[in-house]
Length: 235
Image (cartoon, rainbow, N blue to C red):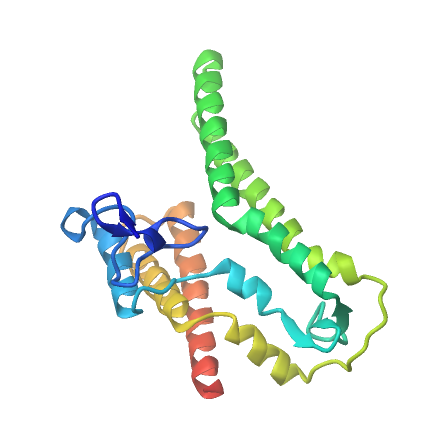
């Protein structure tokens, strides 16, 4: 099924960076894309039209199908606990409302409303420029807290339940955690953090903001190099 200039129906945003089976994107033809969109388009084309990052798949990979339901490990050191099939469906549906299309658009709407209200308020009260940074930080912290609370729903569900499987070896738990990240996302993270690190390193200014970007992007880049090496060894 096609629409909007011949784009595949599967191209539209669904809580993920979206591209159709042919690598086409929902935001237009390739010749009209910005440089950033061209990078994403190239990633989609190389991946055969699959997703760079899929939060729904990452969430469901926490559960291992067994007789009578699913096995869920609340942490790397804890034993496995039973989650029934009905509970699994409810958890997945709740997470889909947060990280799926409806959840993403709700976050976008809330942020846009907050920006509008803040812009009007700051002009009426003549607030200083540094207050904008506080507003941005508040939005980031609020959204992050909401996502973390939603992602911890399985842990809250099984709290107090007896374990039905022994804890996993530490190496196996780390391997399963790395399996949740696909190579497309790792490459994207390396490219993004690498460009940010080089940009900060070559910046002539050495203020607090530049140092924060330099240290943060360098740590992020080093982390994903380590993840990439370990994931390569897993295969």
